[in-house]
Length: 136
Image 1 (cartoon, rainbow, N blue to C red):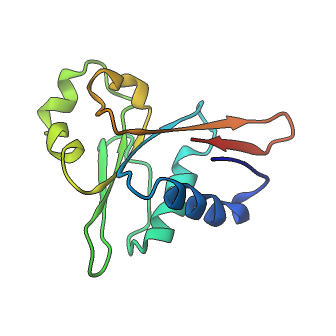
Image 2: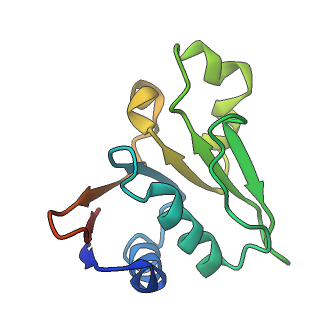
């Protein structure tokens, strides 16, 4: 998948395309520089999935759980503040990554050594005109 997104109004389509093209995937590593729109894109994905909670950056809590009526929850991680990989084992990351739930990971490069082989890598690049290129 490769899409150029010119504004937040195009994110719902990008979310739909990503999830359809990777319909068997449950773990998504979202890469991008600070301010690239990782959280905003994850919010669009959660809306597409029917989450009833508002997706917010879990920078300080490390993980947020979003509920979906009649379905499994969605987990949103932010590893920006992780200093050592041991920190993620302290809250049981292996249970999340080994489960059947959707997991969306910001700053996944901080834990890339433990990411499962079936992780879908998503890269958000900020273009000179302010648009974003989303690739998986």
